[in-house]
Length: 632
Image 1 (cartoon, helix red, strand yellow):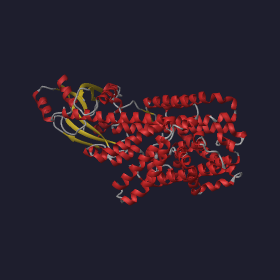
Image 2: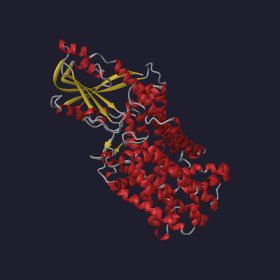
Image 3: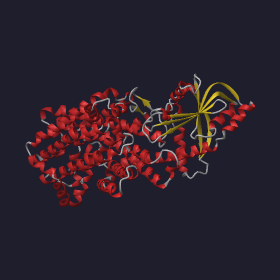
Image 4: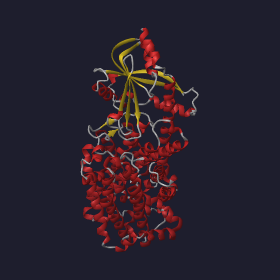
């Protein structure tokens, strides 16, 4: 999910084939590497299913129709319609449904949608913990087939690859981006070729294209047949990426890549693996790698490893993007963020997120030691996110598009039934490892809700500590406050009165700059805000100017850039500016309704939050922090 510039995708400056090629390297890495472990996991011992021809055809049919219903129909045909100015993903949906600011957010329906969206976002983080680990492990396990003598190296080599992968994040993937697309095009081509090659030997597997074959399998196997859906869902992991990355490439390139390259290749490969199992049931230990001719098995393993690195890279970078959106919308604390590209705003690096994911991935590899065991931990987070997306889709269809309850409800209900069926079958794996992503998601949800509640309390406290500007003007006229040369910028969350930080400066220093800018930064429900309407200003008396800047939830605020623009327009004098920032000390002895333990958690996060100057693009020499106290 580290894309080329979004603007190019929207403006059409790049051709449709090139955008589709880029989408192959970014969007489809996760779902494109699922054949490494999905069918194999369906025959794990806990399901008690033998690789008989009927079982193989039934499971392959379930996989193919899961891809058709969930990816092709749900996401490609329906969910991708719900774009927020071209952007997709959980936070884009939330921003589309619920105003980022204002009283509407406090209404109960809006609160329920926010909670649901935050649960979906938290589950995406849970998915992000497992995907790199299981992808890399499943690829490296091909060594066991190529050279069994090196089986003991699978875990150490997987750990080494993950360390290198996470270590390289600080450099950005822009330089590698140009090879991601061609590499994944080669990967999907190989998937289709090795699958089609095996189809020549067991054409009976074509019967799996009939959905009734899967339905008969479920009927005949009862509970065992239903439970195996917990492994079938592994074939559709990564479906959410089609929607989340929509803004990077556009709908048409993603749809084109799916329908013309990815979907046919996956169908051929799963059919090929099924044909192999019908012909050689003993191949159930590794049906994917045994598709390849023995002479090219080692290069096949190498290609698979590179493909899983691409898939993991996309998801890791996606976690960075998700965190940036959460920061802008006020759901997680500010974190140090580095832009790794001068031209692509979406290419960012967040060290704390990177280190956290790396440590957890390494622990998963060491703890589970095989993709088979790790597959038991996979699925709950993915299917939970899918279910949340279905509910939010219904809300958008009703509120934004004006669809009738029947028009919106029928597809949403079908999607939700499928999602919840897969979710339920994965819940039975909770004790076998499913608790891992759920626990991590719960921790993320706790952080997001606590930060938002505490942050709202802080803003209310600052608003209560403000005073009318007339009092400031009287102090200036009376000589109580000395005016010094230069421009002072004070940030305020509301558009009236004098912010508490300005009053603090007057009280302690008895001085103000000759030019004062009261700057309000507002995160909008749009992913990007461009044009003249993003910046408004009002000239006040006594050298004061009130300015309001609108920032999209996928953009990074640039306070010095805003001041320079005001100067270039002639609204401010030319010259350097000093930025005054509030650094509040949280006291937990207040009367807010937050639980005491959550107050302490928020207090801890506030103490460790990244400096506000960094998140606003302010050079350290130009920033002045003034301390204060807030009672929660």
